Amino acid sequence: MHSLILHIKNYIPVEDEEYESILQFFDTAELKKRDTILIEGQICKANYFIVKGCLRMFFINEKGVEQTTQFAIENWWISDNLSLLTQKPTAFHIQAVEKSEVLSIGNSSYQKLIQLHPSIESYFRMMHQRALGAAQYRMKYQHGMSREEIYRFFANSFPEFIQRIPQYLLASYLGFTPEYLSELRKKKIS
Image (cartoon, rainbow, N blue to C red; front, side, top):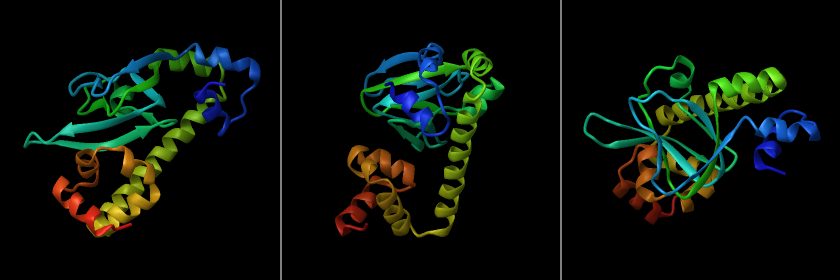
């Protein structure tokens, strides 16, 4: 069974005969490491489900430094939801961190999908609520914890990222310099 269908079934009931119908609304893309699927200034055209691999969202600050805002691994979604909704240019880039396979669904396909399978709208609502909740907690931790506490919390909550994500990208996401993250790792804080 396809990983997207298994993921959907974790949140809403899906009948066996609906699988193929649901999947026909998605496009598949194979990405090489560092392939970019969204560039600042473009209009985001799709929501991306990661079947295999890892993607990241980032922006480039006024000093020309990349600031990672989100990672997505298997069974996670990634998109610039505001650009997708408003069809206005994005301020972000989305790039493959490693070789990846993604499914994408654009706005028109999404509208057709929820017309044919209305219950799928509940699934997407739950995914957006989870993403919003995660963003709210990330803000809380960034403003209420020391840098060591942030790293400890992240390492304990997402151990798969600590080994999988290059250190400079992890530092960018946590708001650290790579050197500071290296010092924390040497202390074996977890």
